[in-house]
Image 1 (cartoon, rainbow, N blue to C red):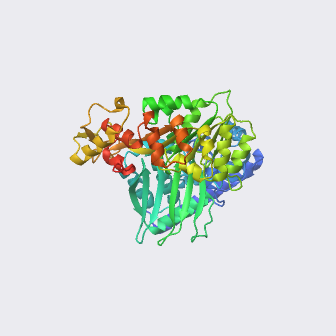
Image 2: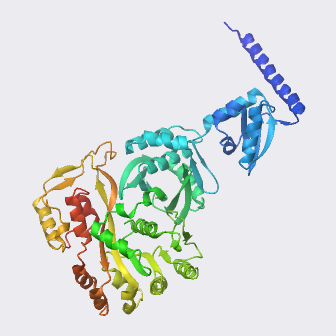
Length: 557
């Protein structure tokens, strides 16, 4: 049994031992010609701590405790240790200026203890949020369903530690990447804040956060995105990046004021999700063959149309990869650059608009130009002029269908007389979710559904495209399977329609025709409409009729 006096005596002895150790370290520091530091009296910089992994720190009996720019402060137990010298050399080769300090074993223990307070993620003022390879691999292994993400976030919320906000944001972003989410939504309501992912074009609930936690997460996102923390009543936009496995994935942040707080949407611009080959976008073989002929033409314009989020940019990138070769100069004007290619890519900024970018690009002797979007008369006129003067131009436009491209350009002030010479093909597209091929369920269509199928397919000109069986449909399994994460759908595919310039369309354009008249004139081209393409894909089991009706109006035909 230890008495009170004995305990006091032990504490006194322990104190004297520590003081003696510190004094010895101080004496030895003079011997080795380095400075001395007591880490119990110094604030340890957590960003500096991350420079050296914990296992390596313990192996070399060292800890990086300070960092100012590229200048590092390195505390070590034995400056003459070959491992320490090798470490200092390695840090120097990485571009750091290293100052070595002598410390005691007790100081090292204090420094190493701080590793327990580190999240696996780190952030920088430059707007880059880094997730370590080990952590992303761990999360990808753990996250199979939305329930897994919800559980991990809930665990982070309950940590009640200083670094929990970084950890929460880390799990939310890593979860979004692992589930291939295109957007992350934070939606405050009176009692709680809803977190939702947009998966394959559909918003899905993940979990709810309390307002206090959300307020801290919001501040962190604003800080990373370069937004003003003290402004809450105005809309703000910003952007930051995630570094995963050496790849930098950009996120666009949009903040809007609301009744119960600011709502945030993070758009995840993942290069992996946009790097889809042309052959895998969902084009019917005959349409794909015709498009491949068009993209190798030396001049003209190829337009893809559809609402935001319909995959237009992905299609344009697929075209660019198809035509990119050493003998061709390609320049793009984008907002923002979503996928980096070995070509000249420029990004729209505050003082660099699509119109200014296009004019500048034309002075740089390009063969092919991609304009992210035709928004106004100036861009439309310049793009048409480029297509008429020996350039191949790719761009997008906001219309509901391919036939609407021509009236839209006329509305923007383009003369109908030059449209036939400038435009090679006008396309329209939508994205539909693909049924999970592992768990989709076959069924017979209802009477109403069969009527829609028969009516739509009756107008298909090329009957070879129609599947032999038109009395079978497929649905998503309600609770899905492990392959699709319990959703019944996995991935998305495009449904398309296209109108190629020919003599009939050229003749029609002289009369400033309506969309319906242009669509009628294009029928002999035998290209299915989006409705027809969608029905054909539903009959083949690629998607479901319910999903198709969510995206396009099947009653109109």
